[in-house]
Length: 124
Image (cartoon, rainbow, N blue to C red):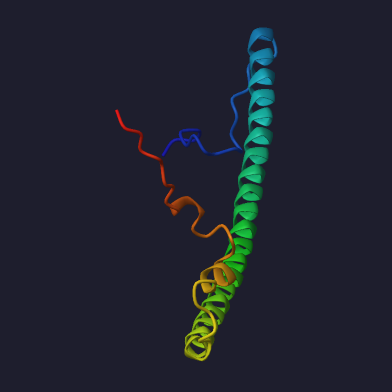
């Protein structure tokens, strides 16, 4: 292989002859552009890494929150079953509650939307 044919070889650089001023300014611009690009790429990689780290932390926090919520749902489900059992066991003992039982259990407005209203009929 001839010397200088490898494009990735950084030890070999083309340098213009000292009398070629245009070539040297182009090389300076090229070096500056490469340096600027290298810095931009480095910043981009750092931003990408930071974004990935933030997503990982958010994922861990959401998993913890999800576990806590599942635990609370389980506790509330067990409490609802217990209270339902207590109510079922108590209902046969409460014979004193007749028509007022729904008002006591559900409040005065429970059947408010289902009340029948009598409307007088007038002859035509």
